[in-house]
Image (cartoon, rainbow, N blue to C red; front, top):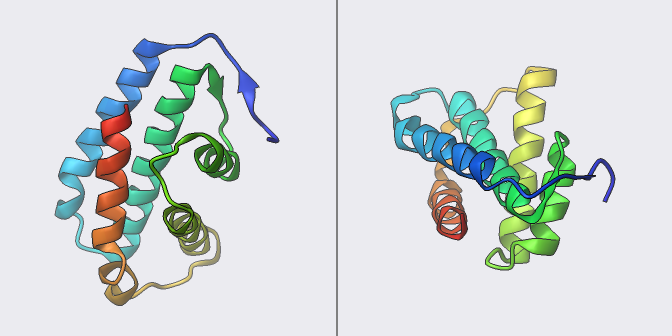
Length: 125
């Protein structure tokens, strides 16, 4: 995997990242705009994956590498869930870098699955 850096396993950092992701997840319903919720979901998922990586002794700042790591190492995720995580990354990037607008339909059609993915991943931390 490109951009994957070997580090000393870091349980303290993993816990801090997991706590941050949990706190973000608890407050996501306060965000009203779909584009902000998509960005926050993306950040939550990235923080959880990075927390798991820290437990394995790896790190990266590259979101694509995070997803590759999740695909290969987080066995509770299905290929469809990994694909949805990647779709979320792409949608977030299109919003942030290209000013793409997003309707609430995009999020409402996927929200329950995204919540399921996050809850499932938090249990592995």
